Length: 169
Image (cartoon, rainbow, N blue to C red; front, side):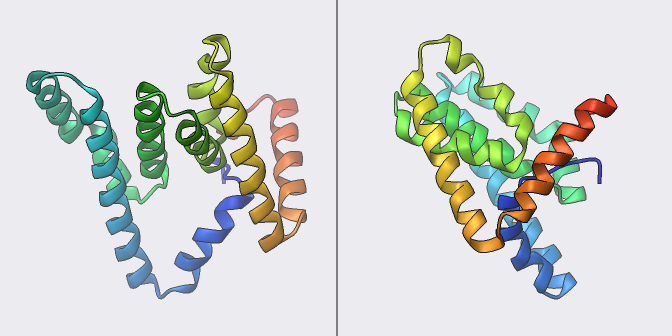
């Protein structure tokens, strides 16, 4: 398809792929609702004042993107929760947690890397170091479970899309 996921996603995706379709769809909707709720909670926890929290909660509930994620069952809702958790960990100066969440977000969708690039310019090298270490650990888990071939195909696909002038994101 036009959207590319890291081979790490083969692990949780296998649970959905092997379950009966109605059960997998229902489980996916529950995971989506929980992840969206968790992400919203994390964003609201980082805001000061009830007015800001109320405004953001209303905007979130009315946002087209929120309903689309639940309707189409896209895993981007997990990306939202991960990015929100990373932002909260950064705000609370927890570099290990922020790095681990950043690595998971980048594994989920490579475009999440752009959300964390400002860390390099912002002298947050500890977060970047933890993200790199967590990324290697996640990759190692994936390679141990699925082998190296999915990672070779993933890398060659990324390179070939750039040469073709299109983005896989």
